[in-house]
Length: 122
Ligand SMILES: [Zn+2]
Ligand SMILES: [Zn+2]
Image (cartoon, rainbow, N blue to C red; front, side):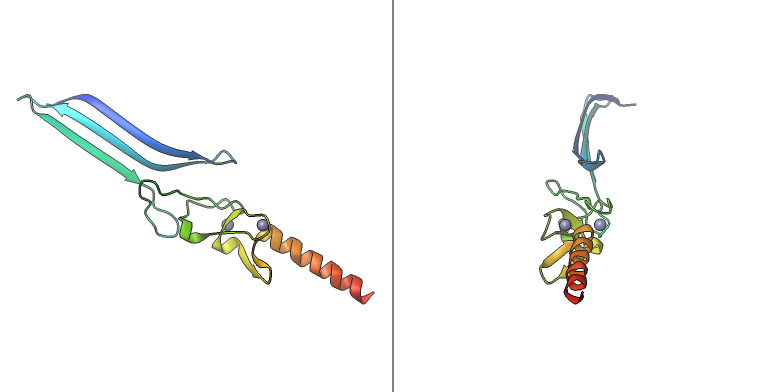
């Protein structure tokens, strides 16, 4: 039987504005001494797999959509709204002549265009 005499766990955690927590990765280092006095070390690193199929490395950031709250996403699956600058996932991004818009901004622009068009015909 070996005895664990040292353990070092490092966690990288993001706390999002809505209170959600994303674990970016965890390093768990253990050292033990066996009967002959030899020291054995084990290092385990947990990595986050994102919904779009990426595995994040140390330093990569897991992202969450500010509109539909899904995640974790890699940077590749995210875009920035041209109007409000929030990060949104691709399903929440809409092509528009002014640029890519998030769902709320896209709805607001369409409403404003519709209102302007209604005013123009009365
Ligand atoms: Zn989204
Ligand atoms: Zn927006």
